[in-house]
Image (cartoon, rainbow, N blue to C red; front, side, top):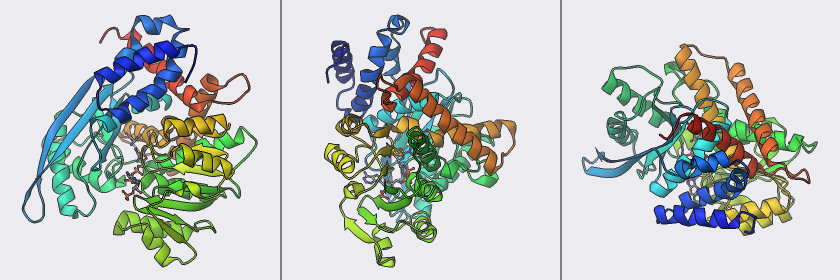
Length: 451
Ligand code: NDP
Ligand code: 2IT
């Protein structure tokens, strides 16, 4: 890429690459920020003087620990545990825990880095962090998951707290895992406190938190469409994933009059050309959240649908796409296929699901493209609302939380428009989100001195 600041960006990235070898995902996430923020900094020398970006790419603290546990056969198992406390300039470290065999330092550093910008965009006082383990919950019994979570929390509890670091869920960590970890924290500390978010409703959780990431992504996409005088009515929507984010993105799209024609998991995607009905979506929620089965079973239960083994859903014709599974799950040729098939809006529910080349293709075609750090911020924003309710020792109604979520997503959209609109009127939401997220954290870092 050639910009007036090409040399500064290259020099900065060469240093980041040298300092963080073998961390491809982390470097990818930093590169995207550097390309948009370095040209901005060039006109705001205070950020250069205080070496803000150089400090922001270095996590404040990285914790790595052993997680030993025993399986149901009584055999000793061992996994790696991590927590990356990335930036606390504007609030306690905040961000999810991911349990997946692909978890490593690079993946968690990319997620933690993006979380800093995302949390800043929510308008709430939250710093950024991320953690997790290479533990694979698939195929494990509830008792095995419980023993793993208890062992993981036995170490993590030393480092977190409601005013220090507040973890939540991510891939492989949902209500069940948060429950086991909360129970162990309470037992170790003898303290009932809001140390985790995504809690159960009768022990400190917030209404709408389970729905928030998916709903928020759809609210954000609706704002983008509205800016072009459009809405979701009758639009065909392709969604990847079938976990927490995907399920509630599908629910909200359907409520807004769209037809959700695909969902997926790591073994393939299902295509339901008529659009998923409410009953079919409930069936998928039960399949994934209760029976913990595979998406292929949907096509066996509903003959109107087809299952495409080993494929991703981006080849279907649709007007809107929500990648809601994992990083780098939508590449350049898939992006070009979506564009050729008439896709006009893409909102990332997952973190960094589009490759840099895919993003470039979307932007070149003037597709409405929202990066995850803007469009999936509804999850952590509602975690912030859960923290507020815990501090107040009160619970807000479903309607109250949903309205706050909607307003936060509108606010994030406005911030992106404010920093990302080019001379032709096209909004570069990547640039807008990166600069708006950066400014708030950077100014706080300057105020707080060299720490
Ligand atoms: P879940 O564990 O609930 O669901 C994950 C889904 O993605 C499953 O369908 C899973 O399929 C699929 N998936 C995971 N890894 C891969 C892979 N390597 N290849 C193909 N498919 C894969 O996670 P969430 O829904 O919570 O998270 C999904 C994404 O959204 C992640 O990027 C996460 O970081 C992001 N996110 C989540 C938030 C939240 O509040 N939960 C908030 C903001 C972003 P399978 O079951 O086969 O593994
Ligand atoms: O990526 C994310 O924003 C999350 N997994 C949610 C984090 C949170 O603290 O709710």
